[in-house]
Image (tube, rainbow, N blue to C red; front, side, top):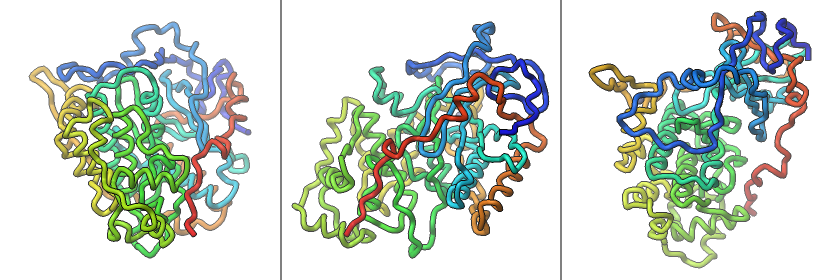
Length: 452
Ligand SMILES: [Zn+2]
């Protein structure tokens, strides 16, 4: 790795300012393993919550080591210190980007998306590290906000989850999804581990490695290599070759039930069993609801026993499964994707009124408090205009060409903004970071079933 420019040799941190040796005032950072109580609606806003941690203990600052916090199919994420302001941030390494054209295009799409997003509940790129000369350009490093936990860790932990938590999480998660869908983007891998939660209970959707722009032409085939099996929509389990953003809403429904019941709703061992568990709850689907299914999947359903729906069992998920909660849940867990509720309509459901009020009264960054009172944003659930444009993908034809385009794209991102950052090869954690690898195939979700 030829990464010139890290002139501040005393800096032992993994990230260095690209051409300035200014000393680091690192932030104190607390690890919040405990889910905090949600602030009551009259509490003051957390406008300066970053700084608010800093006041406690400045001498601890530089003690915080760079350390790994997670890894997945498409990258490794570390918790590191930004040398420019001492804040803790997340640094994601996207390795093996330039192995083949498919991988180049996927990473470029993800980079473009991360740079495009502007929504409180969607993770976006704060920075992309200065690339070395193109001959040495092998890895891409993206800086994002550091989030302390995710919904998977919270759900499996023993800490209590109040119905207020469930309402705030679900409403924010749907707010982020409404924004993504308004951008014309399907996330395609919504699962609790991809919903990051910070110490103020603010939630952000992350991991756009499988995201893509919706396909309006129904004759175009879309990949079925999507969505962790437990959260996979029935139309995908049944081999539909075309699907819409309602596959994300199905996943939301599964996670909503998981928040209420503290266990995975449809935990099957195989895609066929996954489908069977779904029909156990929803009953045998109508032919109309299976119209996009492949023949083999339809035959499997029609040969099996005729099942009656058993939706009232959703009331037994927990004491928090009120009539309103179950009503909204049943609008998400609809077999026919065309009849499933949209993110926009789900946000207007009365179950989420309280969660939205609480969020905008004391947790959001879009509203603020003055001495006469709270000044609310004009739009609680913003969308984006124009949509995300994936036209750039059409003319990408070789690895070398995409590499040059990505190199140029990263340099353009940095124009006029703050001092660029680069990797510091002298840092204590560098060797370990550079050799950390992506998840082994056995740790990845199983591939979808291929119907006969
Ligand atoms: Zn607000």
